[in-house]
Length: 639
Image 1 (tube, one colour):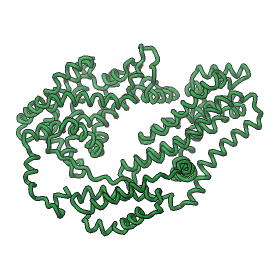
Image 2 (spheres, helix red, strand yellow):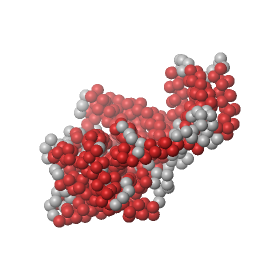
Image 3 (cartoon, helix red, strand yellow):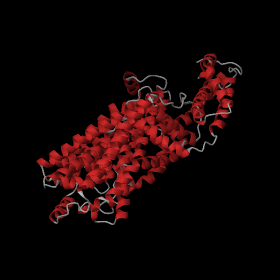
Image 4 (cartoon, helix red, strand yellow):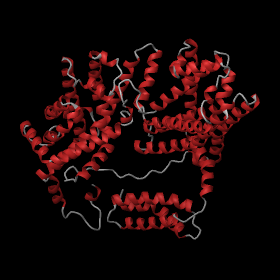
């Protein structure tokens, strides 16, 4: 947009801002909204009109609004009331479809759990545990079916149960990030367990007794789980269905909305923990009417605040219901590939490039490389069927050995390693193609043309590195670290340079040797980053102290694997096989999503060495020298 058009479009708004900022009766709430608009305009002006007066004007105006914004209001308590009275009900109303959907799905799974328990009474042992079922049977025989709530002192029970309730609710919400799949898993687990547990008592003629005991605290606790699932679906839908926003902006907004709903559940989860610890344990001493009243009152509170009241608030404030939330203006990020970077700049640009261009290379890896990886993995699983039906001590290490074949126990492992060298070259090509086509739209045809031209160089350049990684035991990797930098860039340099294949391969060795220090730092840093990112699925605390002992703390992948094992058990399938398949799927997805980050870092290091050699960026800068005007815009200002 030209500067004159920008000013003409916004000048009336700016005049209004000036009037409000100079007024003696300034409303800090209104100024807060104005400040957001001003900073967005200022960001735009700083990007496109760096040497123009409008930028200075907006900067001064923003400072004046900022000063007015920070007037002390002394209304913090009133704001809290407003949040619970208006803001939260509006967010609940906006997410009502997701909340209703969560409720319906929960009912379906709960009924399924009851039906399954009716058909197979041992199913209750699957969703809880055989020990828990036996203990409950003993309690029923002793005339106290709900004695499980009386085996611990009240305060300890309150702290433990409340902490667990909050943890489960927030995991149900957070796992919505994974395309809502994680949320549905938690919803399924809790619903099936409830349905099975409730039918277990019904089959013994204790439906009313169990209902009046469980739902004293369950009205708040189960409702909170269902609402947390609705918040998780809201979070995931922002990622899946961005609408008019960018996917990142949509995710930020949906996360904010879902988190508001989650925070509203914390008081109810605390009350649920209190009721379970201090009231449910005395269910035998309470009168029937008091239990029915307490359960009915709890459900009424949930129904009123999360169903009825949001509709009332939405009708009272229709202008706020569909209001588009403002998002910060994000200027288009460009990358100068012809400049010398410090190591810190290389790491910073690596993460920026990964975030900005993720969709392009991930599309190739997800739709092409990932399915081919699965073919190789299933091929390996077939030849290592005995290992796939075994519980492993260092699970991640053994699974990777099976998947990649670096155990070299037979000819099939050598075939698998060869296939993986080709697939790894394909991942390199997906990222290199992204650099090659920075200013072009994605096209499968152009990618395959690029891959056909450069595959041989990438595969040969990567072969030595890959062979050493496969052949050397993991405990000798520290020795590999000293040798690896000498051929660290061999896979990327040949595609970034010109000349014969022999010349480009030789250049890869030269650039790798020259960047020895950067290469070691890069390997160490990205190894640390990968280790940190892997903690949810390969947590160090999830490794048992001995092969047959339980781990100190199970990670998220352990929980998911156990869930799949339970499902496989109910279908009379091999539990360990399907648990290990689940682990392999997650490991493959992790590699597909995160390995390109390491490749991007390698490419930036290679570009550094190339710039030192050719000075291409310096030559381009010299061509533009003297072409900028201090007083008017030109094409260079918009590059």
